[in-house]
Image (cartoon, rainbow, N blue to C red; front, side):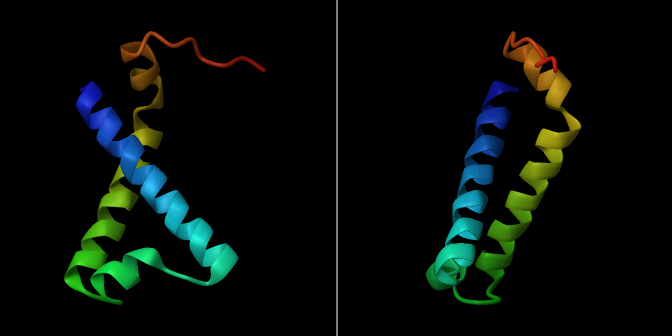
Length: 73
């Protein structure tokens, strides 16, 4: 499962950088690379969204797999 965790993390970084570019420079890198509204661009957006859902839903399990201690306030 660590492989899936790493893939999800990479996808979230890609999505975060893309949204950062949209916010700062009004430039959508995914659309520029794959074409606005193309099937490939939609696939990238979908994979980033699924990665976010996966990370949110399995945060505690990921922490246990990686032997991390949950942060306490």
